[in-house]
Image (cartoon, rainbow, N blue to C red):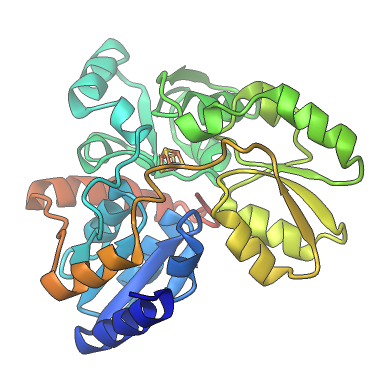
Length: 308
Ligand code: SF4
């Protein structure tokens, strides 16, 4: 079936089922094109919790759909492709976090939203890439266990005067971009600011003109007077950047900036999800209740703004 035909079919199904379609900034362009909302995972979950729709179709990866379910337990949340997971979120499980907590009693657990629900359920507060520094600063503890991203943890560490016990996880897509690639691009495009996501390795982040979340990158590129930018995050963001600032030029920092999990979801999956009600996110009431606490605490701390 043609792309346009599939898109029309999905829009019809969304209406019929009183469903809302959310798409992360890293999704395929043809998916972002017809979504009701696009944005980062946190932004999408929070906005989805305020909708009247009965069904949320989350085009992203599993932990994002889980967060939507945690914040909207009464709604049906569908993840169109069951294999769309996040390797970084899977780098720590509940048992590993339990052990870490027992080694550091009294430490406050700050978990990046890129964690699975059972890990959130054991955390004190969540954070996003844009509020991580503020959250770690604000928690009432001098010792912080930070999971799962070592690169975001290392970025935060520069700005806070606390002991940070950082898990050894990373995002394979962001971690496998190297400073040499950035240095070459900076030579080739000397006037272009390098906008970088903090999931990149510290040597790459160190070369950035601006370190921020995906929403922060989109905002900065729209408002900044430069006309060329080097983009240090997953290639799906180019769709939003070009839509928001069609007159500007965006150079992806690396050919490797593609998250295979984010690309798993196709229009066919979205149509099938709506037609067959698959794949529904199921979490136990206890997990929902416990995982909701750190997410809501982050919101209550009033520093939840942009995010990943
Ligand atoms: S880009 Fe990285 S953190 Fe985001 S979903 Fe893909 S693997 Fe996970």
